[in-house]
Image 1 (spheres, rainbow, N blue to C red):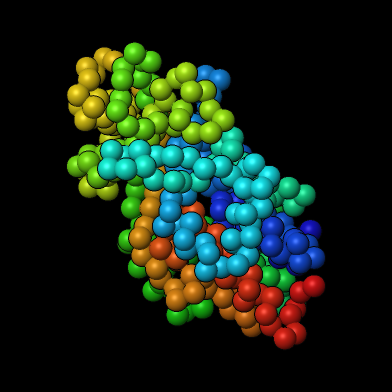
Image 2: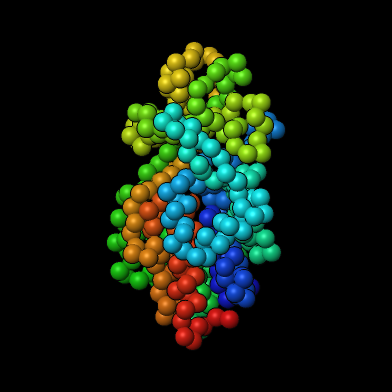
Length: 333
């Protein structure tokens, strides 16, 4: 079995930043990721020669303001901006232009940068973990592979995290349950409009069916000759259509988008439909945005503990790294 100072389960925003910060501090780190690559809800979809962000659309002004409270997160954003991996994007919702930031060329480019030079095992689903008699954590994957570590950080959704082990502190279990009840699913589609269809803005929100729609092609370093739109359904609409066939849902949401724009339904081409079962939350379930057991070197960091969204995930990761490294006599190093 391979042994590490720390294992991080999940290569989304929280897991990627936690792994990066620990690696910079000299810890041996491995990341286990069940998917084919990093990014989590900053995933993208290939549509022809273009990649489209289907999860996190951007970092808005509120999220960027929250980053300023965490020095290490703000420093990371500044570094990405200096290197051209994070760029400004103007979003016009019709009530004025908002200044957002987006990953270049895609949102998950940030995660790939964080995990550069870090050991990551993709398509490895962590199935369960337990503590050995020597005090190390033993992580078993569905593949049968076993890994050990001194410190274990989990970034999975609450229900999945809960089911991984009986070793969780009992006071954390109600937090998992409450978080699982408050996470909302979300249907998302990618739609292409003909270039001769004139749309007055590159963003829409607060529609009864459509929570958020943006012209992904208007982002920096994209093919501006196309009209590729990412359309995210509202929580109420998603809940009503949660378990329908995805092709049917895609058609319904595409029709709603065209109706919102007052254009014929046949004008739009539906390119992709995706359901995020753990799409969003606006609850904060922990005062400092993470859970950490210093005695057993076990913790959870994730956006669902910290108010939801990429910035919540990043600040949750920074918080748990602070907990892990601030101990007077750390078990790692």
